[in-house]
Image (cartoon, rainbow, N blue to C red):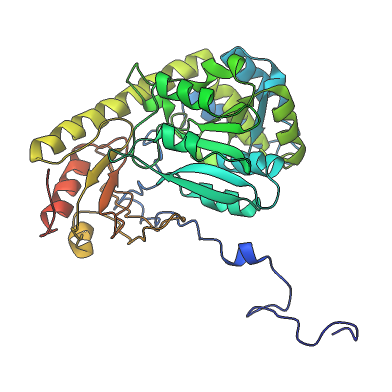
Length: 398
């Protein structure tokens, strides 16, 4: 110890080094357990059940042979492909190591210590973590009774301290998406000095024509930034590629705080291949198949008497019901308990035997009493749903 260092310098177990208080109190982001191959499938991350398309796999395999070289620092080829796809200038797009990393970069670029970020809650569990790391404060606005964003309440929550408003559409994990009218109302109601970040990770699975597409509003709202990902519909979760679209000045600021060479060489090649017209057509076909399975399971659950709001995910209110973990495990489920405060949740995780579609339970907060199911579920997924709920003796149906 230096002779000039105070003898009573506080530390934490395992290290004498000072760590930020906010880091020590961050909630942990808890992924679903990884099951044994061939027995159960991990469904808690909403991974597409389909593998990468052959042309995409070929592109990333070929690119991997050059892994001794650095990739393009700002993924210029991918940025150009995305600009063509969305009809915007290349200066309006920044690519990063998954959409979560980019959301963090947005907050780092915009927020000073003590600033406020308005978020709907319950929503994506990473938001409170990203906000805290940026030194800001999460102002959570409760969802409506049917799991939707309360747009009027979100606008009312904006104060002079607010720097960012986040919208998640479709909302993860409850499922409802903002309609075009709701999205327009949110953007019209938030002052232009406040950045509005619209996270559309699951927009590809939406079939309701009334749901809004934030990209169509960019020209009218210079404070709008839209987040998209290759992890879901494009079947590239393992590649970690996301992107933002927004005003050039905002995108430039985000790029300045982003990690250089943040997207690997194979990931860039895979995303470029996935952005070609023929690949996009197949992605749309796959998303339609997933949505069809989701709708089939919604109909089956409603037929059992469950109250299920429609759209991307499936949410079932259980009231005070408790799930019996062994019963879920017997039908191929992976289950964890979860608390109810706005933090990264250790959600209800439910997997099932491979080979027959995709169904999951994401969380069961004991206080809120809700179970969330994934966007897609096959026949085995429905059997799991029936098995888990059938063994919850105090469950409440609509």
